[in-house]
Image (cartoon, rainbow, N blue to C red; front, side):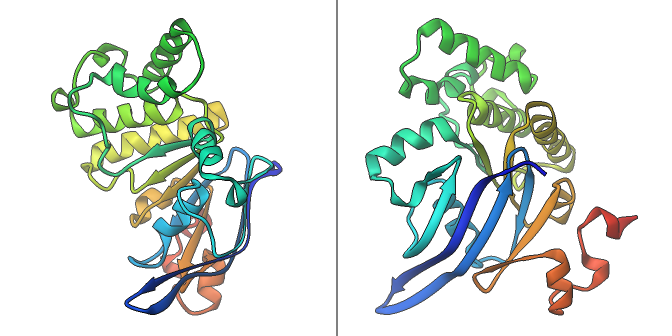
Length: 247
């Protein structure tokens, strides 16, 4: 396996609500290899969104460290984080988060407007990203003129247009019909295999999780592999999403 591109070391994250401190993540540790397609599962309220926010530099842990691409994200200043996110994190959202007044081309272009690159290079990168997701013929359509699956493809093009270190996908198939969901998962698999993209997929859907190379489960603020879940009695062997359990 490739060298880890991400290390999470002894991370603790707590929030104060109504004067009470609630610990969401407890001494959490995780390594992700470069080019890995990782699935993250867990019940609602288990801290999946909190974990993604820490990985993406949108929040900081109370204790512990988050290292990505050889840099300690958890110690950066807000201005450093803003610049780092633009180049290193590509977001894919459940509800697309496209600007309705902009075309597909313009939505994909948005992250590049924050980078010091020429207009020609910006155009080349947008066209390449749209070509990779199969939407070159829809570049001048606005979101309202696209299907849900096509809108998510625009979201994926926007996520990859800066050639980020990590792609973070939060329930990317949650708002799609079954056929569109399969197409999006196929596309994410192609990005991982063809471009060696590192992808973190948060999902409630076992069918989506099956498409990843490895699955971790967030339970009571800690991460467990599927095999560890079975050993702890939290998952029956027949419920495992690992490919070996399906064969």
